Image 1: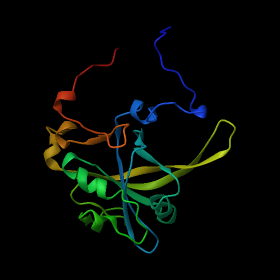
Image 2: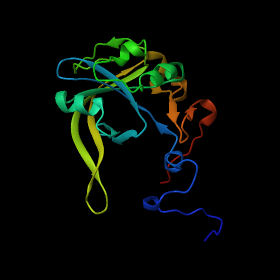
Image 3: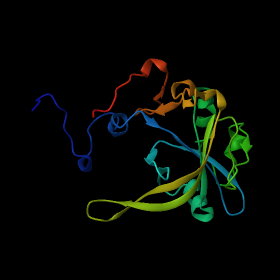
Image 4: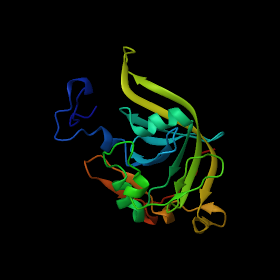
Length: 206
């Protein structure tokens, strides 16, 4: 066992200038979620706790740390869209995370265009090269080991429709790097940009 390991127990604090948890589990894809409430008011917000969880059917999810507008809206309508955050959209994505009231439309705040979806009422971000239309499957409130609930909710949705910019399909294969997705790091302002230099190939055994 290595003797140069830094050790801490989260329940007692990390003792460092910045919590390393987010930096270790990363860089993380960004859940740029568009939603609307029961009255049709739009919301657009990025979530750093986001990922894909299943192939068939495709299911994605994000965690709302605290009861945010996205969670409230999705509870009301059962729908949301995920939009790929890219390097060219980084500033707009950052604007959309401003702490504003539910009456504020982050599409307007971020100078973005709501585009009609096909199967859900919630619009997607026109400027984003990839969007998923999603229907709610589960909302799970997280809990501690003693089963006490914490104010964080995991929102899971089935992807029922996909929009991909044609130029990102190279011979029918989606080119991850060409989209220049941005990923969340662990520091207060850390992001990463994915590019071709990050690619390496490895076949599964057997």
